[in-house]
Length: 380
Length: 145
Image (cartoon, rainbow over all chains, first blue to last red; front, side):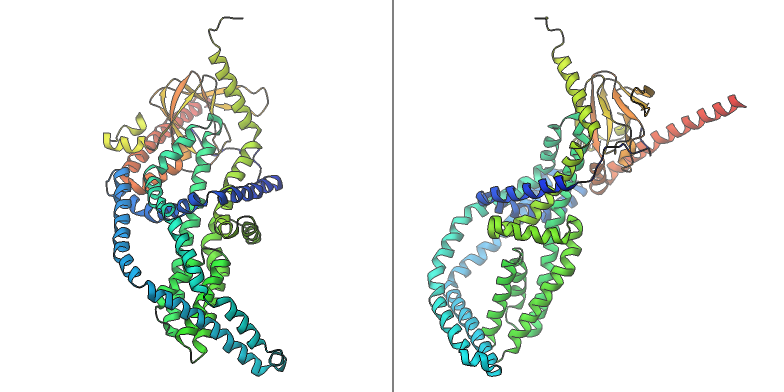
């Protein structure tokens, strides 16, 4: 019994107060989430896997399978495949541990040697740098810092990985329950809402789901495109292990700025170590990394993620800085998805709170329920 | 329920997993005229009136239709997000089942057979209303002439 008709007054767009609330809530959430990273990280991984596996579940449901059975089947097959891959890789990785230790030291030395060669090249061009003995001083300082670096930090890294392992193992469990009970959870939330706000809540839950899906699916697409571009470029340069290296650097870019910078540095170190006699592969790897990052930040990211999140680029950049200040590396990783979800919730709540008709309907329903509850009670 | 009359037991189980059951007290507004429609409602028990509300503060509620268990309303919300043309108000305590537009869209992707059965029932219902409105218009025109 609906059709076109006049829109009711009272609906307003999110204004400065709502936006101040959105930014404050995002900052507060980042501060709180920082304390429960053991749960946040597996939940994020679980969400990424959920959005990755959801199309397979839908396909199975489409072919006639029950939803719960489809979710169990997809999650089961995926995790058995991962477990089988780990069972194959882990013994090999343990056997290679000594080699890795040596490789890490070798690549670190390669990086230092690259810096020294570059500074010497600059010194040969500039009298000022030559007189200041820049190459000598910087190399000596870095040698001081990096001597025994791997030996000093490897045990800490191993301990950190061991401490995080139980938490990371939560991710498959969370993914399974997201796949199986995600819809049930949304219905449970909608049931808790008063009748007046019920339809808005349904829409809100749908939009939150769309926003998180847009972010994580966009992130996966972005990683695949960036990884493929880097891998192709590195294959052309002739770097050994180009495919793995390209995708590793793309995954590291999930942590804005810090991850990207570490990925770029890693590329330079690998190129400098594997081509010790010539500088052009290192410069080419650096140029390739910069070109892919620029393409990613200014073309792919706004195209794939920004469009879905409807975030103004300036707000996104400022919030990235704020996220880094509030919660460090975790803040950098979490700030955009958290902001996207808080933005949808905030804007909808802003519309509900500023809609006098919805509030009046809710008050009316409460009066009716109070009257019904007091019915047939004797007067005091 | 007329909307789901052609569904098999297995198909009904799929639809039931997407439904939201809501209870309304007599006098409570289910949805408002001019509000953006998000869901279709199927009557389980009680009575609901569909009516037009005037724009003045003391405007009366002009009942257009009264619905009983098995009937459904708000069906245009499944097709677009245009504002509701009328208000739905519970005449007595009632239980309704709501069916969200995005769930219907999901059904089109995952269970096209079920979605097309529901869509055909919706089309039949709208066809009946269109014919009834056409007959009323003809009667009014002949009365005028």
